[in-house]
Image (cartoon, rainbow, N blue to C red; front, side, top):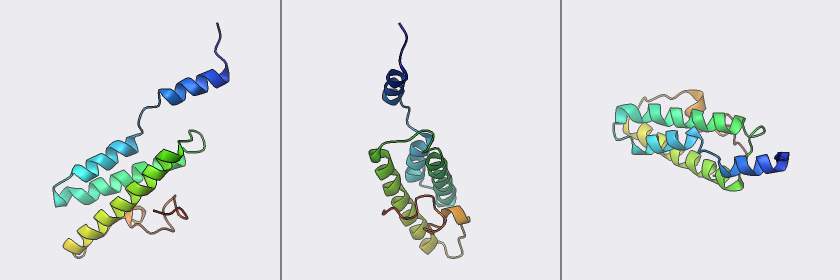
Length: 109
């Protein structure tokens, strides 16, 4: 018995493995060493950007998009909090939270 394309698509969606952005985000939230925190936040933002760039080929659900938006908001707050604690801290452009450089620009947080 052969599976139709629609059946394969449904089966693939049921078996969807959480994307690495979720693990990177969780790792950033768990980081307690201030010296490591910004690196983990940058990594999480890069992972979220990679996931978003895959969106057309592997679209996620509205729930995943909402989760991504919330995670970006939390990561931005972490960055700001850490920058206030450590004056002179500089992040790469991708991690500054500048809405013009993030792939989700135009989406509310």
